[in-house]
Image (tube, rainbow, N blue to C red; front, top):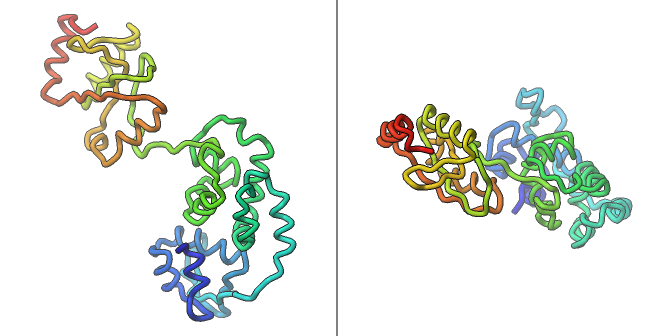
Length: 264
């Protein structure tokens, strides 16, 4: 059940900040504000008179709200929905749920304009860049409620021409790009730089007979984080990467290979 549904199904006509935090599963002012503000803008929540605030001038949350459940005439909104880009109404979700349109009216109209203009001409950019381009707010496409709405409307990342950047963007270098690649993960920055330099100058190199297509600086514990390499590989696109890991005990051997010119 979404945050909005939890709020609108609340048993009483009023709801407190503490209860909103319980439904949102967070007490973070910025996150809670991103969930509450759309409901206020849509007229579904109204701050109670004389209610105090959390004292945050940017992410203001009132101590108590009134829940507005009166049935409204949505005929005008349904007409507006039909003027949106066909991609936004192809599965009739908004037509059947005009309340969702009312809740995100501004965002959906901007998204419609984006599609009418050519959806970035099919050139993919990062999620935050695309969010800023469309909405003037880089975190809009990270907000759970809005992201869930896009899923209900069958709008995908490909439709938006965006990609998610991995949590850890490792320093890397590739002398060539192929469908199947062998990449060395190195934990010593000097050795990483030396191998990178050789790859650049010789369009590749071999280590103990193994040709390398690229080298990646592991960054200590970062490379062992859960799904770090999985996300990195996904970010690289439709390729299969075989990772080789250079342990600290191997560094003197690699350095020796440099000195006697066996690494080429």
